[in-house]
Length: 104
Picture 1 (cartoon, rainbow, N blue to C red):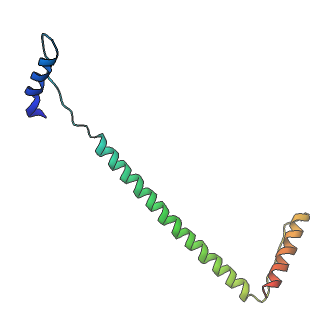
Picture 2 (spheres, one colour; picture 1 turned 45 degrees about the horizontal axis):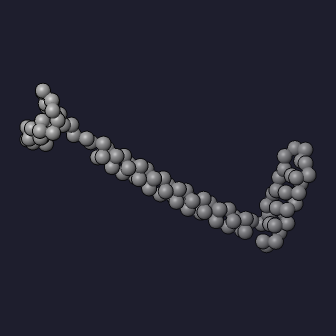
């Protein structure tokens, strides 16, 4: 663009009736490159988050599998409550106890 500056200035002078034709100044617009760079960074963060989420899901799945295995292998299981249990607490304990008995 710099090498064409004189030609561009002459063409402007032909089209516009001015006493003095301003000299064109060119600046490189790096916003497209910056936008592409930012898009790539965002995509990488998104991919890293998905990998971490998949790893955590797998870890939780393994933990649940291990907990189920321990429950099946246990000879007895203690089901405890807090002090002064209310009806919801007692109902939940009974339901859990019945569910555990069915798995045996």
